Image (cartoon, rainbow, N blue to C red):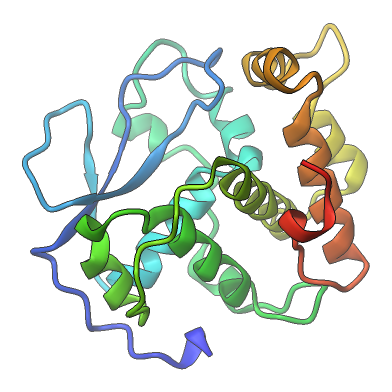
Amino acid sequence: MIANRPLARSDPATWIQAFRDITNATNERTLVTGNLPRSGIGNNAPAIDYEHGRSIASALVSANMNSLPLDWAARFSVGGVHMNFFVLKQIPVLPPDMYLKNSACGRLYVELIVPRALQLSYASEELAGFARDLGYKGPPFPWNEHRRHCLQSELDAIFAHMYGLSRPDLEWILDATPPGSSFPSLKQYELRRFGEYRTGRFVLHAFDSIQRGFAPDVFAEVRG
């Protein structure tokens, strides 16, 4: 189990976590963060670090920050084109103890999130150090856009449950009725590309699966 693995194995010389400073509330995603190979970064990609359990903490916080429920909240805090630290500190990132709670499908949230976050992060050998810190010694995961979309949708649904959202709450966050507006750029892009708002369908399917007591598997269960 991931929760029983030692947490103090990360090598700070191999990878860092950063978030994108330049943003806008009208973008497809307002808050974007991820792991990078250790390198020099500028002020438009501020770094985030952790005192304890660096690798698992990074995987969990990155997944949380990149989730649609948190992004929806972030949109109300961004007034310009910068995701400043003082803005980031206002955003309702979940506390560590939440991840050790049982989900509706009977598994700890940490067990649902970390493997999915790993697959989304580890697509290049340059982040092998991050993967090893999480206990994974295999090759990078292939870049499959459809599978990545499914994994991200599952994480969006998992965090919707963690925030205590009902299905109507999640439907509103995904696609608020006029004059409300949630993610219009994302919706318009997917309507042009897929002929449907695919993220909405995927996330709601995953949310319902968890509610019924099953771990979500959008890639296997839902038509692409």
